[in-house]
Figure: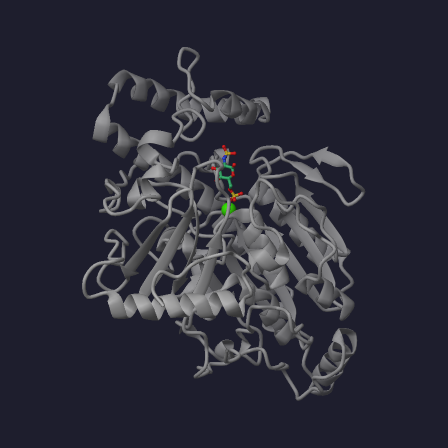
Length: 530
Ligand code: SGN
Ligand code: CA
């Protein structure tokens, strides 16, 4: 099969010999940069959790106002076709770090896997090449981080209030404050006081926000209360023609917990996740708790007094879900602004690549859902905006299809470090220079494994090109789905097997087979159409 663009070693800045090992390649990169009077590249990679592009105003103006995220896009680039390889946290993080699909990096799901942290990552390659490396925030890979000079991570999913952190010594400490602020404080402190300012750096700022259960900072509780948010057109999807979709347990009406997710806590009311919510509230100090109760108590009383049912209840849940999510976005956006301001004020921004993305997209009521996992657009996509360092002239939108396996080769390529042969992603650096490589990939591969598990999304793999998507759900249903994204962008009509789709089905099946071979996915499959 034809090799795709980006496997060739492309070094940024002045021409640099590309055959040397990582350390010497970087030494030459830095020498060349110095000779050219340029500062070496820094990387600030900000990744949130479950932040979907429907909730970023530079992608979608229906709900959110995110001036700081929009500032990154306005001064830099916005990817309009950015996707993940496996739409769930740990696997996404493993793809991003290794530049490889899940079956190659071994971290296929959150529930049964532990990340083999001894394997190569872009962080280790940058570190070997002389970069200062650090991560603060959510790691979620089971094993402790390797390859970082400095790390402080939250255990598992982390806590919004007065969070625990695992320190590099192995001790777990409890800090005071709201997690999004605390992670940013730690990151800025490292930039200002802890790093060796003579070396280039790569800093990973990994937020818990906007992960479930969307607990806002008390400072933002009152926001968005004057607006009533209405659900998207396919909120009442009946899943006709699809077998996996009706099996899921991520439905706002059926599965979103009134107490844990929507905070309607009252002594005389019960829910499946009530105890989990009480545990999160117990983390608060008396001042935080008083502010929380003062805000929520009238809403709780009003809610139970109305005894909403059916669609009225579903739409009330949707509205509260969006309000909570937006309040959490507000903290995130403010904190991204703090990082951008720091870099600008300290004269670091010009030679720094600032990346903002999420570990995957999320449903905001589309198909009636919250959560992610499916290869349908809302969760297959992930936001991606970048502030570009000097030397990268492109501004505005980039429409080529990119995937989170591309991040690792991109960072190495831009830093002047050799991209290892076995990385499966491709460097996006040419796109950032404004080039449109004619042999850029024309289709993306996806494979999701976490089943049976929370939210009950069946295992599936699939292929997407610029118009069609073919998915095979193989456990424990066996169904193919085909969507025409041009005619049916919300993926409501599975046209697999319909008369007139034979040619496109055969073409997409061939692309799927080619990608499974190219990426060496060992899954045993049969292609019903050859
Ligand atoms: C938790 C959440 C789920 C979520 C997974 C994975 N439940 O288990 O709703 O799908 O994380 O999310 S909760 O009751 O603990 O909030 S991921 O982003 O980490 O992959
Ligand atoms: Ca996530």
